[in-house]
Length: 244
Ligand code: NAD
Image 1 (cartoon, rainbow, N blue to C red):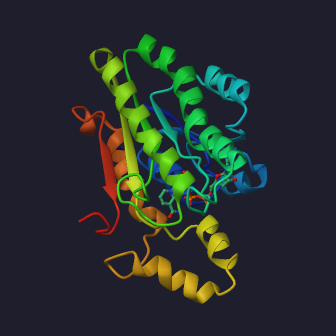
Image 2 (cartoon, rainbow, N blue to C red):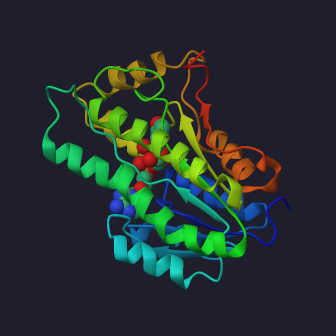
């Protein structure tokens, strides 16, 4: 039990990487507050030990503050929520940019602003922000808004890490390659030729396959635990060789 006694908040925990993270954190003994805007998805946590599931729209700054204030403690914050837009700079609209900056960047900032005072008061904490290999570490076509916002996550992560490094706060980002999650299926199925779209995603991965969500979350457990006590301000790529 590497996380016994720790309390964690995970956003976008209803499916995909967030859900896999909740289960992995709870299995290591953490008490996990699993949140998602889609309350129906949270039903999967019924009866799961150490997990308290509750609805939270991370675009609602006040609601984030309320949830964090209501937690008995917060040692770990995993900011997982995010959205993918397709298109180059020429195809991206102000509305796309606003939406993605709010969900991919500002919501993470809001959660950090709500959690940090409590973490500082209790002597420390670990913040884990969801970035992506896509376009922030490796340039990829057709992901202008996504790459721009995920790159901002990396900068924000380093700034928080630098400001609070002497006060027991660690702040890191994770950058997965392409992960086989429900939203990826939706994006594949939205194509005129879904089979070709899936093949194109797989072709980006040097291992010749997509990741499964459970293959991404061991790094979340590591960063949440005291094993990573000397790691801060870093971006951890788990990408099946995409950035070799
Ligand atoms: P997903 O996209 O399949 O699920 C996302 C979850 O987020 C859903 O349960 C949804 O209800 C929830 N959500 C959406 N808007 C929300 C909001 N406003 N407030 C709270 N919850 C909200 O999950 P995923 O593909 O595992 O993606 C999770 C994160 O991982 C995202 O930040 C994504 O950018 C990032 N990521 C994904 C991949 C991938 O290939 N799947 C790769 C790199 C990074």
